[in-house]
Each structure stands twice: as structure tokens, then as C-alpha cells.
Length: 180
Image 1 (cartoon, rainbow, N blue to C red):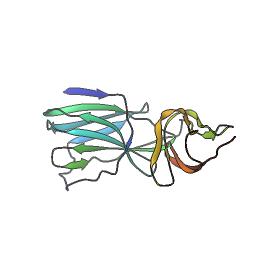
Image 2 (cartoon, helix red, strand yellow):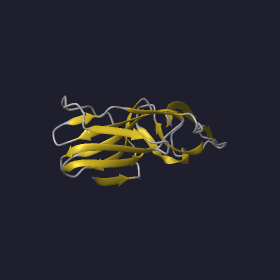
Image 3 (cartoon, rainbow, N blue to C red):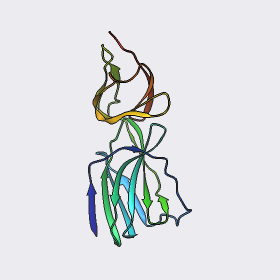
Image 4 (cartoon, rainbow, N blue to C red):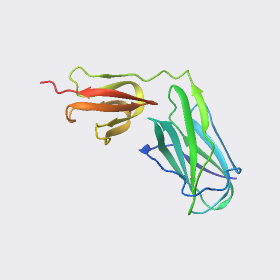
């Protein structure tokens, strides 16, 4: 059995859908442990295969990691996923040359992780989080104006107005005001 590890997640929006109706994924098993490591096995990997790990948050499936497959009979893969308070849903998109196949969704309830809260700073130049977390700020037109991972995000160069803050599995409205 060969092994590939990916422990540095990345985050990007996706609305990928299967291109074809694929063969059922009877040759794949996935599970996630309490530290946020997703383990899965797949058989008969093609040389051009990619496995895209997706997490459901912010009312959509978000790509959080991509693992390349190399041709062979059976593989064990791991990927680190940021777990948040509450229900976490993870799925794997198997992207081969001419088909996309979704594996079954893996769900885990995580009540023991504190919920991340946020507050705007007094001078309205940043949003501070109670812990490091992935985040996105979306403007009123639906454009992502900030995204990243951290315990704060600067908003001082954003225009005044309403924005949507995506943090953990929530979307909140925030108002950016300039103070002089």
C-alpha cells in the first residue's frame, strides 16, 4: 500500500458538480478522526486522478485540499481538515480524466471545540476573532474581498457598507464604517 500525505489545507470556493453519472464508489472508504485528519482509501487509481477534499460551510461546499493520485491498485490518503464547533460535513470529489465522482459525505459532530466569536475593533479597522479560524468577507455584490486564516482581518481599506462575514459554518452581516 502506498501513502501520500497532505497536511497544509487551502481554501477556495467551489460549485463543482459531477460531469457524468459515475460508477458507484464501492471501492472507497473515508473517515475523520477527532484531530481533523481525514483518512481514505481508494482502489485502482488512474495516473491523472485528483482527490479534492471539500467541507460544507458558508452554505456551500468549499475545496479545502487537493491530493494527486498516481497509478496503482490501492492507496491510503490523509488530509488535514479544520474542524469547527458543531456539525462538520466532509466529502471527497474523485476527479479523473473524464468523470467526477463524489464519495459519501463523512459527518462529525464536534461539541467540545469552542465556537469562534468575532468583534469589530473600536476604530473599525479590523475584525477580531476569539481564535484562529478560516474566514471570508463578501461584499454586497457577492465578491470575495478578503479570505484567509487567522485571529483577525483588516477592513480599513474597504468601502463603508454592509458585508457578509463567513466564519466556521456561519455567515454573519457586518457593517464597515469609517471613523475620523
